[in-house]
Image (cartoon, rainbow over all chains, first blue to last red; front, top):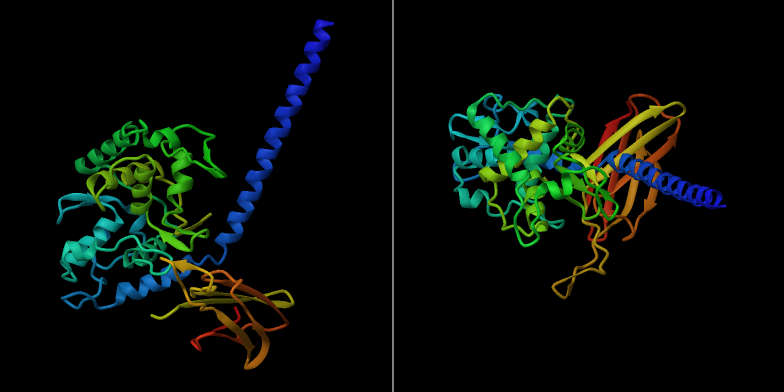
Length: 269
Length: 102
């Protein structure tokens, strides 16, 4: 009698589990389908077009374009640059990501002050920022290029190590770290699955689609914004734009994504 | 550069697949910012011409999203056909783009 009852209960439990996972699988498939559909002809292309225009525009007190900006592949080379960033730059003697490097070009080439160049880096749906346009354009020039971020330089290595430490550093009023959400598989916020960014697979899938156009609020978001907002969500103090800490976190994710083909700028929920 | 557009026209079997992206705020006139209504501003009319002949002349409304993407299928067509797409919004602003069927 006992055994029979046990078997029945077990049977019901197995059935319930099977249904739950089938449902989860179905939802994942549907989300994938939705993502595929939104990625086709994504409005991100409009940011790329505007960004290219901005890149070639003569701006700032010096009235020059960014066409001589050195993103690490030589002055003016944008092709594949994003797939090799962040990297160490001799002239500034620090590791820089795309956005902090663009600030450098805006100050050294175009003659903006750093304050002017970073005055409005995060835009909104009504008025996107120049940085968002430029980031979309430069990133688009690495489409189809394999991610190859170096850690050969001691400063690059140090940045990666700092990024890893920061990723796991628990702090703030909620005792959170990046790893709290992005360190174990199967986590999600509402319907948004959270990638494990400390793993190769997770970083590859995610990093290669940023910056991204958010369908839900019609905005293009950059990696600096993503990290800034993760800090806010963790109830951390706001990090400085393009600071060593944010670059280090970008470095950590980019190196983890090495070997994958860059396919951004992507389209997000 | 004012409101960019992007077009792609491909011949797929016996029809031409036309896809177009338009940058536009598509304000519904319902939204408020700091208590003030944002005036309606949306694309009212989209026309598509193939080799100068109008094949689609459609009205659109506030229901269409910001930065819309449209896809159309036009019967027939051949590689090299000139496709021209234009829009007019409720403030009289216009834009157009053209491309050849690939």
